[in-house]
Amino acid sequence: MDGQSRDDALIGALAGSQHGVVTRSQLLDAGVGRGAIEHRIAAGRLLPMHRGVYAVGHMPVTREAAWLAAVFACGVGALLSHRSAGALWGVRRWAPARPEVTTSTQRRRPGIAVHVRRTTAAERDVHLGIPVTSLARTIVDLAHTLEVDELERVVREADFQRRLDVSAVRASLVRRPSPALVDLLDRRAPTQSRHEDRFLRLCQRFGLPAPLTQQRVGGRTVDFMWPDARLIVEIDSWDAHGTPTAFQNDRSASNGLQLSGYVVLRFTDSELERDPARVARLVRRALAAQLTVPPVR
Image 1 (tube, rainbow, N blue to C red):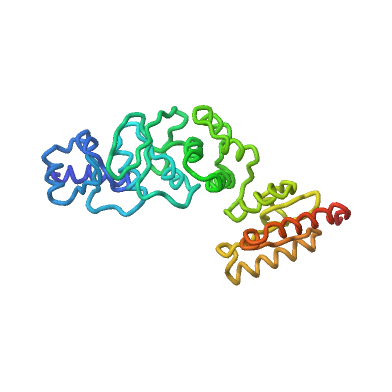
Image 2: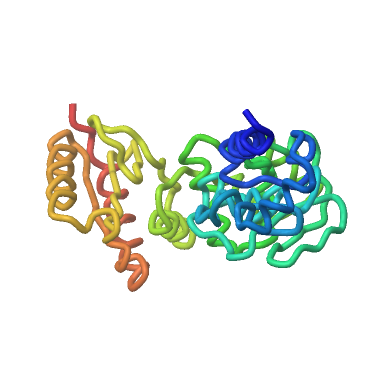
């Protein structure tokens, strides 16, 4: 194998493990000479993404490539963070156009939102090959970035995925206090959507007893449940239930639950938004009625 082929193989192997992204320092450490690097840049085989960071062969289109390139551009010890980290961890759907990176040293880079903060060893992680703030530290950072309802969705999504390490979050909160996040941790409950989050806020607003969430009943998972009252509430959102199959499955499941002695109330997300007081009255009436009736044996 001649020198050019060897260099191509080294570059390809490195890029293949890093979302198609390499750095100049990595290439030099691997034995690719400065001249060989400059030749490939001039030929369009190494495409600059940031200073000293290149895409190999073609400009990558994935978010992961853009995120890793941004981390590389910010130097050793840099971590993807905040809203970008939330998207990488899968607890947020959207990420900003400019990747957010946390570093302990001041290092400004065009196209990157840099946060200068220190992180502990426990707050550093690697996910999908990308250095990133731990999920716990990410949640704490987001507590200082997002509105309360957005933060609530992040916390509940992490809880629903069974990835919420409350002790780790509280440890990071010691360095970055957030009363809003402490409140969410104290009354946390796993939910699957912002509509379910809205129903929990409704219960709190109107003084209803807090329900259990995401409970297994009769072989399926229900949204909300008061076991002593044998009352179940399901939230029907168009994105999750707006197909004929989903509609039929929901009704069949409700019939089975009611035959097993449960009262099932179904509300749409629009009802929660338009007339929360009516929803609260119906739930309160059902709770009162059910608690006065002996459970079905």
